[in-house]
Length: 422
Image (cartoon, rainbow, N blue to C red; front, top):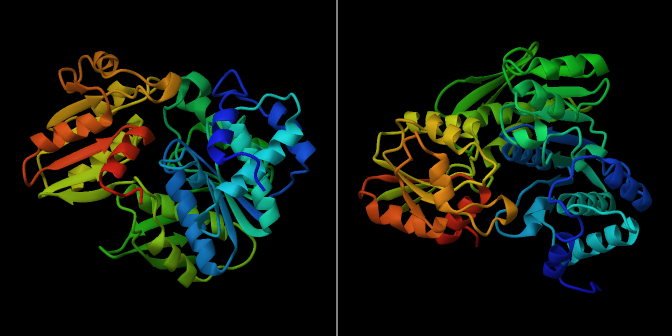
């Protein structure tokens, strides 16, 4: 029986490394070897990229389960409960299983310091190995090359997009960031690329190690057909599939990458499984919509300029409504770039602090200061996202829209407010 509850373990593992992020694989690899961890399933797909990772994992997982495979998925961060990070057969693992996994990591690590994410990754891999799975899908936490997930040699790697984010860790330009993300590719294995024009660093690395690059709009295609269907196509093969339940035009790309990744594995998956998985895949907090007193509330985890550009494209495609934004961001994000990307699509801003987000949090006043020269420079500033959301709802017109976004912390507050955490 577990010796202490999951909440105690999570508090404990937060304290076991002096830094919340520590890039490098040597420490975590040593512990994995002591735990006897090898390949966690018959097949492994690793998903990296700046945006779209969680949705792509969800599509892969849903298609594989529709095909009849027993699956595991590891994602981060979580919105409400740590258990969301580790799924087996489509269900979040229970507390007792996580505790057992953390106990196994602790028994093996000795005096080796591990970060919170490294503990979680080793725990997930240990649980997957014991479950005898057909497929495991691993989402990269940060970058790729030095991320703990990269312990595992994937059969297929996916890089959804490459754009500016986490520059403090990955580099100041897309070429540097692309090189870090390309580190999840393996020699002579398929590498699925969701960018039309990926950074040269990604293509160079793939060529250097002999990885087989499959690039969207070049080697495979996502072509809208009508309001209900789209076509996935490569040379010699095409499938007409239902539109994803997940909203936003970018989800066609994510679904197309998921199809390409599964087709790159040995064996055949029938079209019906692709159709069923794409139609049913869901991810909380991706353009999730609610309605209260005639006001449309849209909640999204988007937190960098590329995600904000996708949000702006979605807003442009919607019927025009007076739109108020509730925005709260971590201190290391390009807040000005996010607001600029949404220029012309937002009629008023409500800024909020994230003081409960640890060392990366910030006060609303600091966020507003960073937004000097943007549309949000004179916005109302609120102590936290909950207060900002209530203020926006009070100011919204009956047929208006409130957009809540900027981080997983911000999104979680809104989703709890509307009961989506139950």
